[in-house]
Image (cartoon, rainbow, N blue to C red; front, top):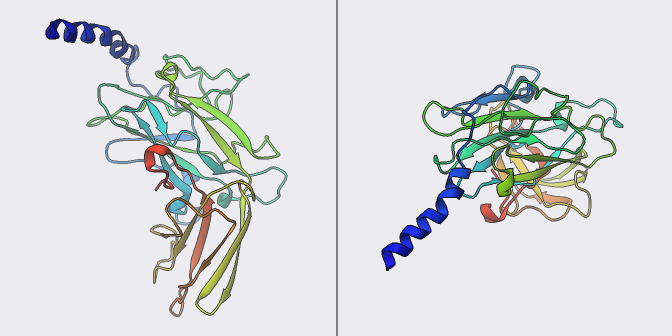
Length: 286
């Protein structure tokens, strides 16, 4: 009797498992030009995620990972907040946007995922088929292509969002996105572009009082606060230390009591929106 029940349960589960198998193989045909694919060796950054001088990666906290989790069939975190640039503010530059490294993780039974722009009114193709009609910036603000997992596959897609909100002032502005294969399973999310964060620092002895405005504002947050005082490092914010709790700072201020740089060195600080998820223990991601 128990064996018959197990067989019935297996048969009942089979249609769901079959629904997870894609009708189309891995392809990058639909990948938009603001995204660059990586492999199991790691992500590859678009030029817009590199500095203007020396082609070094921009500050590491401005490049963070969203996992396409095949076990949970969801994005982790699903609803990130990024700083964008606001067309109402003159002289915007690279400090005013961030990059996302989309990473396929988890079960290899589920072959691939995508992060595809899905805002009402656009014509970005959200069907399983992946075609060159998905171009940037029209009709798609972003499209990762099919991101796979396993040896030699396309496991990453790194995208920049430099121009995403340039015509959508005032900020914040929400952009909805889906996985083209698993939207019916609830694999979707919202990317919110926040105004740039304006950070100020006042030093007194070994203490530095940080205050900031912008971003998600006085009623928003939490925020991630980073510090880099690595001696002799010309390219700052490549391996910064996180200040404050891992769950983020809840007010728009923070005091660092340990700034005592050596001659020719300095304490560098960066504040960003804290993006977290129940599946990350509600801690700010990377």
